[in-house]
Image (cartoon, rainbow, N blue to C red; front, side, top):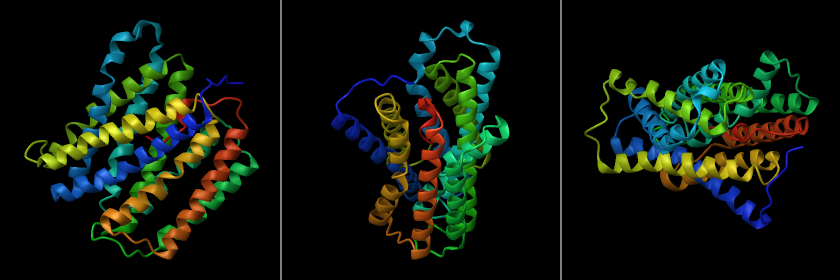
Length: 316
């Protein structure tokens, strides 16, 4: 069994709550940056993605000097590079989805990454999911179908909900691949810090030139846009994920994973306050069904494990 570091219960709860609030701001900062720039679509979404990962990679620069790279197997590094490619794809498609669908729909769908981890683990590692996991997957799929049929009274940003929902689904699948490749890299001896440094840096390098190919420059935007880009790298990425990685060593990974399911709820509430996005009853129903399914599947999946990798507790 994994030995947990002891910390006061109230402190663990407070840090988990801080993490939930922090990651919930990710979609909000994306939408605020889009509105401030007056640009929507793939090009500006790639700029946001590249900026978020580049800031995160820069924050990890000290890690490169403390890692003894000669001790790691080449295949472990290759898996980390593959994870970086998946991470770049995840941010690209998920952030683009926020130009076409609601915050509620996008954040709910992308939260299903843990479901896709179970599916891909079945196909890749032949880890057959338990009955609870299969039940949760079925329920979440039903919720996804409800959201797919939902009509929403939203801001004008949500111009193509079907396309946005598909992009969010792609974001969930690529996030699952990122987590799985990370597991492979670490099982082959790569430390968590080295893995994250490689994945973030590779993802940033892939994304950096792409906005220019879509005709979007890094310069010429207002100070407000750059302010939101910096916040995106600091709050959801640094504070949010660091909080969860800290908490997972001090409490049940299941508790942390289930707490992450509050992200769509908090993000949707902020979307309502800031952008007057009012989800339809059908979308709310679909979100509840999806989150219920993910919760059941997550509990079933974690119950079958004696220990959990911190990197597998959250979607990036």
